[in-house]
Amino acid sequence: MLPSEIEALLPYLTAAEQGELAALLQGAPSWLPLPGPQAMAYTSEADVIGYGGAAGGGKTDLACGKALTQHKRIMILRREATQLTGIIDRLKEIVGNSDGYNGAEKIWRMADGRQIEFGSTPNLSDWNKYQGRPHDLLVFDEAANFLEAQVRALLGWLRSVDPNQKCQALLTFNPPTTAEGRWVIDFFAPWLDSKYPKPAQPGELRYCATVDGKDMWLDSGEPFVIVDGAPCYDHAGHAGEAVVVPLSRTFIPSRITDNPYLLNTGYMATLQALPEPLRSQMLNGDFSAGMQDDPWQVIPTAWVEAAMARWSRPDKLPPMDSMGVDVARGGSDETIIARRHGMWFDVPLAYPGKETPNGPATAGLVIAALRDKAPIHVDVIGVGTAVYDFLAEAGQQALGVNVAEKATRKDKSGRLSFRNLRSQLWWLMREALDPDANTGIALPPDKRLLADLCTPTWKLQGAEVYVESREDIVKKLGRSPDYASAYCLALMDSPKRQELLNRITRGRAYDPYRNL
Image (cartoon, rainbow, N blue to C red; front, side, top):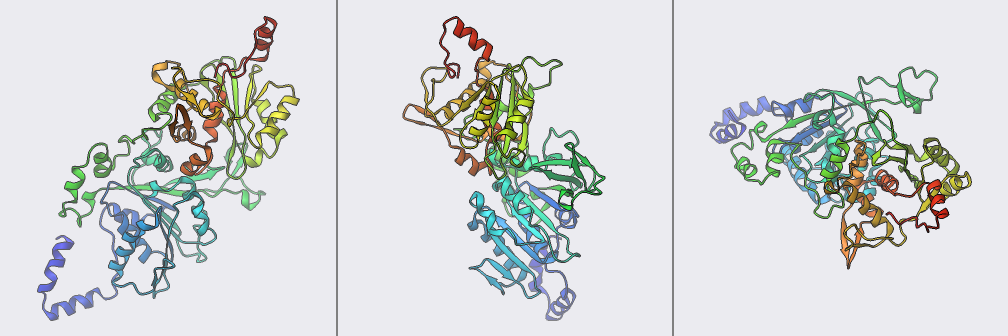
């Protein structure tokens, strides 16, 4: 019998029967999970739980149920504050009242000592409002709408002073419909990425540690230290802060068919009537259904994926033709070194900002990676100037690139000009990746590089192409597009010093931007 059918019979019970039922229900939990995926997620021992996929699978109820029955200090987040209303209303329905709820503070202090806080992070830095406030349950409702950086930052405050209290994060979401939400697929890659080499089953626990901002999947939850770039489980003698403790993750898919409360409401028909690929995403929870690029996206996602699919390491590398260096500007930024051999690009060399604190340190890493006297293209805006100066003093062929300067050419059609050199360099990468150009460009299959290249949009200002600013990209990604910047610099086609000398000898003038 369905719960709705049972509810319909309640008015027909006699007073004695109603009293008997009330006695039976006294002390019963305020909420119980539905059998199936919801119960699996409710009882999961994972530190980080992903739940959802299709619409109507009981995501909101799971969040409410865990908050009311399993945890003491809870934070429930939506990207926009206005989106919290549905969750708060559902909690009121389950509890039966709103006693203790402060709408101004958005905090619910319950009679049993439980405290539920509601928050939102519409802007990149809004997560700072909640730092330093530990919670034993963090709920990111519709997680694909959040910036990855926001989620990862707040996960650092998942803790409790009660040693017996299990701390968990719950991320509920449908398949992302835009490139900005693609990070959830990478975050739960063993379950959601069809190309992941070792796929996981629904509800299976996998262990993951985040080292220098990148996920490292492991065979167990055993603590380790990083030695020579690899996990070392013998961490005796290492400082406590150097020991990395993996967290367990899992993902549990759900569909409307798992939710008996919605089966007879007409919601199924609504989902079936959606156009593709939204129908497959919302009805079936299909994460492989096509995400839509922004119509003004500089580089289509399919073009980048095709270039990455072509990539494989050759038995013998051709000579290095160019290097691109994007220098960390501080904070969570990384210094990225991109190396190009013909139209084959090597894997990125990434160094946290703390490892590249000054010009000499960064220049040393660049020189160590240099081969075949390749020209080095350095972004000289801000801290990059010191790196350029040191490379030049060291006798290297360093070319300082100020992307704020005036563009030097038009697009390959000769019809479009560019607002600045930065827009030109991004467009050059677009032209190289265009399948019709048949350049054979091969990019390493790196998730961050993919996200960076597929994030910016462009517009026409008069007759000029303007690629959106770095600051606007940061608002979308939650970080600087360092990877894409380095690879755009590496695509620059400057002749090597010897070739340049030969040209000068032959009386040919050299324009360093001529081939851009």
